[in-house]
Amino acid sequence: MPQGGNRTFVRFQDCLRLAASATLLAAGGNTKHMKIHEYQAKEILRKYNVPVPGGEMAITLEEADTAAKSLFAAGNAVVVVKAQIHAGGRGKGGGVKVVKTLNDANAASKAILGMQLVTHQTGAAGQKVQRLLIEEGSAIERELYLGLVLDRASAKVVFMASQAGGMEIEEVAAKDPEAIYKEYIDPAVGFQPYQARKLAFKLGLKTTQINDAVKFMTGLYKAFIDTDSTLMEINPFITTKDDKLLALDCKINFDDNAMFRHKDLKELRDLAEEDPLEVEASKYALNYIKLDGNIACMVNGAGLAMATMDIIEYAGGSAANFLDVGGGANQEQIENAFGILLSDPNVKAIFINIFGGILRVDVLAQGVVNAAKKLNVQIPIILRLEGTNVEEGRKILKDSGLNFLVGSTMKEAADMAVAAAKGGK
Ligand code: GDP
Ligand code: MN
Image (tube, rainbow, N blue to C red; front, side, top):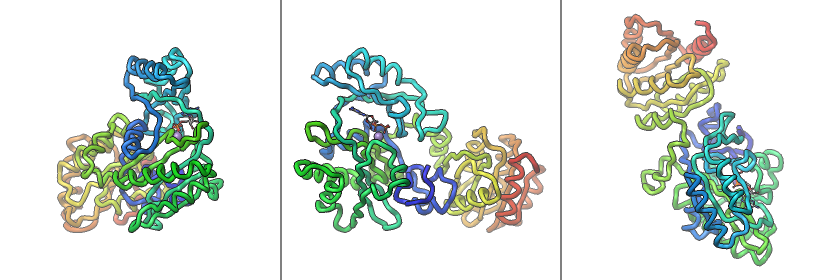
């Protein structure tokens, strides 16, 4: 996962999975990014007249079989069976198969549907494939790359194009950044045809393809803006042997904060693809992101939550999650939050870092005591508390009969949490 470097290429959808808050802030603070499947993304492109291969989504082998049959019957010499998961790199992991007979199509569907697909984006455990896309095969001439992303440094949408399509663009960005051409888009005037032509020429497209390329890119830009996307990638963007342009793959992320005005897009969410703890947290309106460390964090405010993750790293530990309980958290929220933190088997210590402003420290402390008793928490709880009614809060903890560890500064508390997670006290 790219950390730092050219921030344009930070995978924004993963931004909260990066530990360092500098990167987080550069990549857009706590913006969450709703992901969808390739087949859904292609459906959106179709509405904007961006050419994509015809195909059908299938959730059973029977559906896959029917779809493949009708594609062959329609005269396609080649059919492609594609795993639908919310992660890229499926081709390399065996999740994309190009077949020429119905038998091979069936065999491919059987192999892919239900498999635990491991790619560089899924982690070692992989992701279970629960949907397939059965698609018309394309006669590829060249594999290129197109991408749109919100660049926070310039505060503009940037349109990227590269001849190095079909491979990981992060790798290209790291090894050969010159191979990625960029057009920054002035929000007042939008994406201009001359910009599309510039990119098309850089891609080395034939003169007969330039007009189609301009239409293609203009359609992408319009879809990006209309849907409040934060990222759109066509990789590969192909030219075919008969000179056509096609989006062979498509990935779109949306800005979670804008989904209230896109009810139709919100319905595209596939909870089976999301982390179960994150899904649970979203039910309680908790801003929770699971991470890989072993120190659970409960913090109020996104900025403080990021600072907490940083100070844990600084103290030599690693955070198990990002969790912002919000300014107005009540008893119930705190209990829910505890429940979620404790469901993560990696967690060895809980670090509660609260600055009581709207949320009074005594209310928080009482909530923590109640939750710890109710849920019979066995792992060490370390607190750093400041703000309104902090003395009352400390007294509640002390009088609870439970064994809380209280640090007087953030660093001291972080050191205590790291020591506790390592097994000391
Ligand atoms: P990803 O690996 O998750 O990015 O999945 P893609 O949809 O990008 O597919 C991976 C690769 O499979 C592409 O880069 C192509 O090389 C190949 N591929 C996908 N569809 C077709 C097709 O219709 N015809 C051919 N010949 N190859 C395809
Ligand atoms: Mn791809």
